[in-house]
Image 1 (cartoon, rainbow, N blue to C red):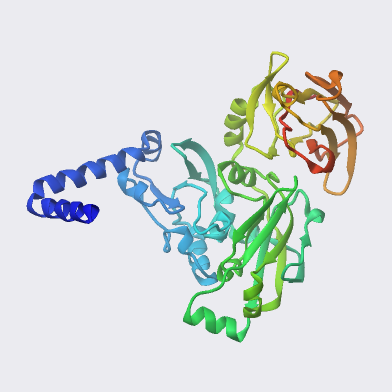
Image 2 (image 1 turned 60 degrees about the vertical axis):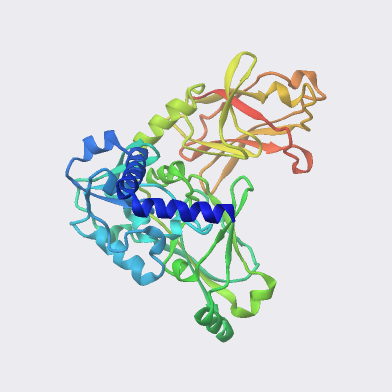
Length: 431
C-alpha cells in the first residue's frame, strides 16, 4: 500500500507543479541524448542522408542527423517476405542513404540476420566500413554504381529436412551461405496461429568448434532467406562477412519443436542453400581490431572462435592471447608461403593452486575447402608432465601449400572435458 500511495502523491505533485514536471522530463531527455551523442560521427556525416539498422532509431533524432529511413524502419518489424522486399528495394535504388549507422541486434532470441535479411546481405556490397563510436558502426556508400543482380546468391542445394534431423554443412566450409527455410503448418496449426499466436520453432546451429546455438525462428522471416554462415551476432561477425571471410562458420543445422506442438506443423521443412558473393569492404575494421587484440602476434588471424571471449594472459613473462579450448583461428596464406611458427601453452593457474586441467591438443592444419593437411599436433598435460608447462614452440613448413588458409586449433582433453583448459598462443608468424 505504501508504494501505491507514494505513486499517487508523485502523480499529483507532477500534475499541480508543471514546471517541476517539465524539468524532470527535460533532464531525462538530456540524459538520453548524452548517452548516444556521437561527436565523431556527426562531424563525418554532416547533413548527408543516413539510415539506422537495428532498433535504436532515436539515435538519429538525438544527433540531429538528416534521417533517411527505409520504409519499415525497425529491423525486427520486417516480418515477412513482402516487407523484406520493400526494404531491400529501398537500398537497391540510387536514392539509398549516403551513410548507414548500425548495431547488430534483434529481439526474442532471434538470429540477428533474420531481421531485414535482404538489407544485411547487400550492405557490404554498397557500403564501406568507416569507424566505430560508442558501439555503433558507421558505413559510407561506395561511389561505384551498385548492381544488385550481381549479388544474387547462387544455388547450391535443396533438400527436405525432417524436424529434429541434422543437416550437415561441412561440404560448404569456407563459403558464405544464404538459406531459405519453409516449414508449413497443419490446418490445426494455422488455426492456432490465427486465433492465438504462432508456436515456437527453434533453429539449432552447430559451429566449427562444436558450439551449439539455438534461435527462435519466426516462420515468415526465414521464408525470405537469411545469412546462415558466417554466424553473425556482433560487430566482429558482421565485419568478417563484409570482408569476405568465413567468420564463425555453421557446420550443421536442425529444427526443434516442443513435442506437444509437433502436430501443429508439417513433418518436413524445405531447405534451399545458396552461396553469396563475398565482399571486401571491412578491412579497416580488422586492421584496427587485430592491432589491438593480437598485438602479441606478428601475423593476424582473419577469423577466430573460442569457448570463452578472447582475453590476454602471461606465460613465461610473455603476453599471450588466451583462446580457451575448444577454439580455432584461421589465417590467410601469403602468396609465396614459407613457414609458420609460434608458441603455445597453458596459463599457470590451470595446473597450480588447485588447477586441474586434463590437458588439451594443439593442432596446426591447412585447408582450402576441398583438401586438408595436418601439419602439427601435440598434446599437453601440464598437471602430470612437468615439461608440458610453460611456453612450447611449433614450426611448420608451408612451401608445398598454395592458397587456402592455415588453422590453429585447440581441442579439449580426454572425453571432451574442457574444464580448466585456459590455453593460449603467442608470437604467431606466417612468412
